[in-house]
Length: 458
Ligand code: PEP
Ligand code: CO
Image (cartoon, helix red, strand yellow):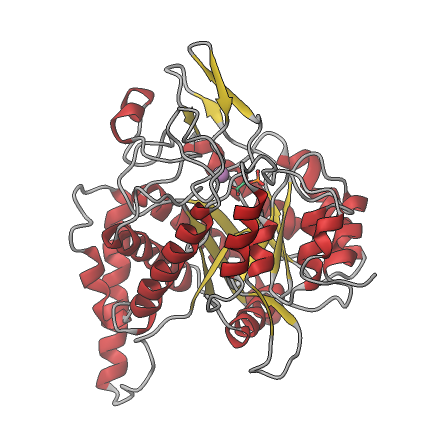
């Protein structure tokens, strides 16, 4: 089966718009994009794969998260900074309370296109095409806005580039220095609750430990930069194709998607012989596959063989997204089959997409306790099957939004309208994100203790 960056075009392509008013205009934009600088380079992608290989071996933990959909109108530096800050705080909790190195992969700098459950939306008797993400059409409910516009692809590329630029600066320019951990709290702690208190305690311990190390004259440990990678759903394959580059700088010679370090395939577009699998099987990036209730263990094995035929470590992330009420029926058999087949994969949990409900006042929301329950069940199931629960995939923001109900600072249904800002699915707010990180850290710590006891023959 020969592959090329455009071999997906001969396949069945789901959820890619085919109603652009002018195909020629779309092709022109794709030609322009194909000459743009890559957003990431092959050596970074290979570095991520090496880090993910450690996750596959149980040595690290993958934290992946960000907006459901980035938007043009909400784009501002402060939002990116607040997002990055809570992401770092979660990583600190997982590293120091959970005892694992954390591989940090944002759902950011390119997460625009959305598969939708219905192609149309009806409001007050008016039916229009659904909103499909800012790189396709507009959220505003009128005919003009809902028409796909190829210029939006260029705007998405430009916004991704400037987001990426800021994230690189934050990751390596000193902001992420652990020695400044207390500064990350500024403007953050408005209310005192258990999560924030636990977090402040943890920061205090870390600062004390760093002081201790410094006082021993070992001040050279590098705490001042972090590795931060980007990812998004590979939905708009025309855009991905235009940013696919054959590596010439790093000697590997293969093709890389240079729109992000990692791409994933959504639950609605993972047909074995369909376009999205075809595109993703040919690029050397790490690839995520969303695994929902309609996927069988045997189908998953076929997908694994198609996307990672050489069983490369750190290449495949299986993202379980069943729902707290379904995971126990589906995941055990899947983990058993994949493990028995000797496949190198990372098991990660997306506790968001199977737990969406409509509140009594009409908001699409997610109960925090269901999110938490799916994560805990995920960790227990994967562990019980003798594999490693290696990651988490979240829709989250650094802002104090009211989109998911529950959590330590309880968001009630009545509060939902007050700060419901998402362009698509409801996200965890900063406090809920940290609370979840503590819960996972607790689980990781228990697992580490068991490993140590086993190693000591106890
Ligand atoms: C998503 O991650 O935004 C998404 C649409 O998820 P899924 O493909 O799992 O439904
Ligand atoms: Co979503």
